[in-house]
Length: 107
Image 1 (cartoon, helix red, strand yellow):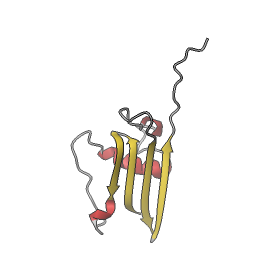
Image 2: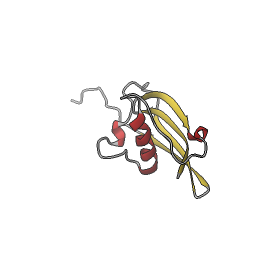
Image 3: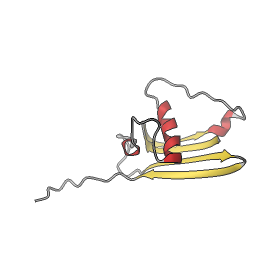
Image 4: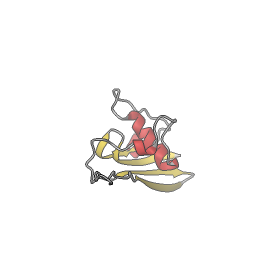
């Protein structure tokens, strides 16, 4: 599998929309995801896994825990992952729907 693009919206530490174009890395089969602690490196891998399997990497976080706490309430949590496998292009879009709590007191 060769990743082509990844778009994250309100996912992990990313409160807005972030787009990663892996095609800019050229034809090298290896690349490095580098950055300081807390910059979102693991979240990129979590987003790819969530797009493909509906689960994040490992068993530390569930998908519903991946919504960014700082995202605008009106912004949906979305991941779109495009990749190539055996010469065929695929695109997966997965959205996280988190139930909103009603603040009204039931009586």
